[in-house]
Image (cartoon, rainbow, N blue to C red):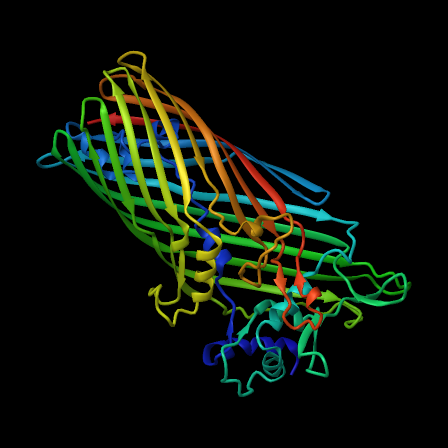
Length: 556
């Protein structure tokens, strides 16, 4: 049986044995919960979202649903369009890249109506998240003995999971392997099929292990496993999240308001990547080696969450607000594919690409973080206000599940969920806004926001990763999010008693690090001083975003 047919047999194997194939991961959860780039009305954007205690705006419901109860005397219909100018910068070793985009977006549409006995209801359609990101970087002239290769990572991944048993399966997918709790990484299977790695059975002084086939003689004639001399990565990531919010606000008294919301969300997320390593042996007459991994991931589905909020006016001019939103519980379908090929001293000539099966789709559930917000606003007569929001997001509660029972002892993602809790912490977001009314028609606005890093395990964001990270192994490139900050300004103008418009400008900066593949500890290496494989240097990525938003409102 050839290696291609053996890998096809792993689909049946994964469904009926104690060996399972890696699917979703810690990297999946972090990527999907980092997509929130909440858009709303131009007024909300001009105040950098500091609307939790301001209210009287349909978009304030995404922060505190109690605020719409202040609209108890009139209804509103509004729509918002946006235009962005983004500038992405990335650097990797000596290579750098700039990427500019200018998309037009439909940010928001909302309707709010006063109902019976001081009750107001609204329906909001919001663009909450989305990213279009491309990395296209090539690096040459690296020292092959200072870094590890993707082949080393693939071998170490196999060595973590009972290599002798895995080899038995790769040689005969029908073998009796109903023992233990062994993971069979897709990447390791592809690497073995493409002959990036080889297997050595247990022998004196050495456990059974997988190892890289990229072994070349150095300038002194000694055989050594090489890292890459050249690298190439093309990475394209696209996503969108749209929310439909149903909100209700109730004025219990002139000084106390409550609200509730239910949100239905749709999520689309795709990643396509191509990774290349080149090897340049010193031995004359020997072909330069290479390895290539091409992969795609597609995730889509729907989710829902609920929120509760309160708003009080204890003294004249002062408003205090508080709200809490549950996680969004998504039911998602995950589809993927990957192919690997290479040339090493073992293969002699490039082999046909080894591919994953076409029927590899699975389903899973994702719970995003809880969100809690405390808000304060002070209004000075009819001249304007200053507002402040503090938002806490608990990323340690982001969980994966195959059944929806996230605390179930049989949840196959328990290891990944524990890693999320260890590696990530609560994120703190501070928003400040101010509005000054020049006259009854014109209002001027300013805002600023700062969100802290959610990373607890700082070794994950080192120049070279110093801690392990769980990835979808057929697509080992992953992202570690950094700080987000920005400022905003805008105006509001009442054209007639019925019609008004708001214009906002916001500037935001997002920072992140990308890694071609994770660092890993190779547990099968006899010399433990050489067990740690630190991988490659991080790709530093940042995005500066200039965004214009225009909202047209009609007062009923």
